[in-house]
Image (cartoon, rainbow, N blue to C red; front, top):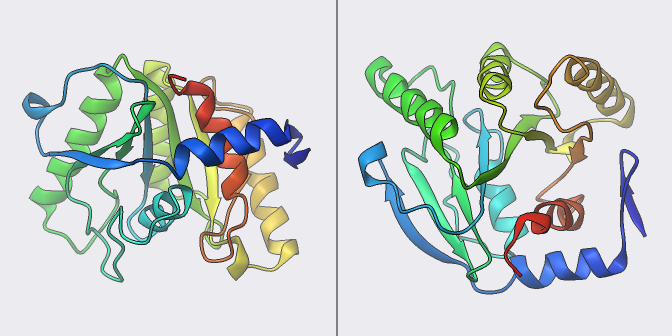
Length: 216
């Protein structure tokens, strides 16, 4: 049995998560406006986070692929809602990174408006994975997204990224601060997932948690 912040997963749950996430996964559509959204059918799990938080790397690690989601040293690479069909079990939705200050203001506003409208109106959306860089913790743009998710009652869970780049004491301080904030948040999942895509840390646990929503 493995555990992340007091949440336990059986070997069976870990294996089910692995089989589904490393199975077939196909790009379906890149959506730039609500009018082009694919029909609501399968359960959806969305990944959100600041630009350069490691979102594409995490999605690639979860699906055991190198190039499913595009990674780049240039923030703001994902500029649309990218839908991936996970073997007919669920959709993974890669949201545009938010808070990228160097992009044109009109482009940033367009990305952020699209994210907010999608999150507010998608009935098949089961969980939002909100990625936070463990080196920096919450930023104002993160709490703005959390405010909106609390308002529309969409459950979200915090996934800390790049934990291999911080010392244990710094990581635990970051976790403690986030846990204190989550206690005030009605739509927040109470457990924090600590991951490193580079070192394959916490990946199995995230799979096991998200596979709960899959059609099986």
